[in-house]
Image (cartoon, rainbow, N blue to C red; front, side, top):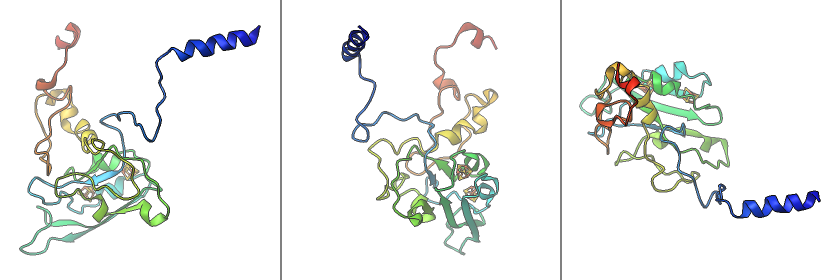
Length: 208
Ligand code: SF4
Ligand code: SF4
């Protein structure tokens, strides 16, 4: 009789809501703070945020960032600082997406996007160069040939940076403490980071 119970389970499940998706044709929405591949951001005027300080490379536990700074050219600066990131590479065969580089960066130059679906056929493609990491003229990640992503998945490229910025501290609530980005201006605070975005709270939470 055991097989009848098996059939009963099968028929019961046929009527339930399907939880699987036909990936990769169909994708589930990704969390805003998913740790995907990085982008190098620019200011609203197009200048690069990276100043070539190498702090990200120094803090990286996987030793997968290679960055070299260089003095900005006279009369044609690349970044607002004295120096800019002349060479910038991240090896995605090593990166563990811990975001320590993002937290260490003093200028919010390096942040992580939600993009992680890559299909490399050689090691060179797995090492992203500055040319590939730098956002385009609209401030969006470049869509590289070996990456599978759809419209909308390139949003929230600096969510984690803002989550770990001083504004993530409750005493900074209501104050935006991050700089503007090309294509976005000054990004909105997220829930819990600004009085404008406070959702319904319990009386205990609002007492202090
Ligand atoms: S996310 Fe972590 S492992 Fe990846 S480059 Fe940044 S510091 Fe290194
Ligand atoms: S990404 Fe940030 S931490 Fe890394 S070299 Fe550029 S400015 Fe410095």
